[in-house]
Image 1 (cartoon, helix red, strand yellow):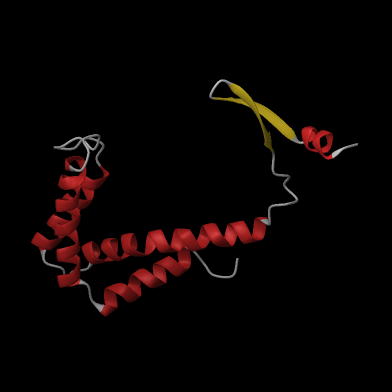
Image 2 (tube, rainbow, N blue to C red):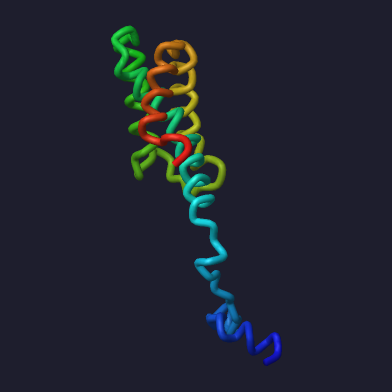
Length: 132
């Protein structure tokens, strides 16, 4: 059996630009699932850390009400699918999102405390434990 016929056994043809292309499937024995889970957990920790800090800041009684309201408004605006300026417009489409993000970061920098960061880290450790 030559090299071409050996790869055809594990290849799947698909259409790409009008021509058929052979795509090799990755066998599950090639993927280290433990490594992949650790990588995904680490990515989750990286993405979740600032979100949990923002949550803890909004829940903290020492954070002034106007700061909480600004954080909630900015986060809500960033998560809403509808924008004042549609994101499909080049450059200008993300300018309104940038304003909301800048407002949120300004509030964040003024009101984040070591205690808030510590509470967020403890919650992060519960949600995304190391070593699993």
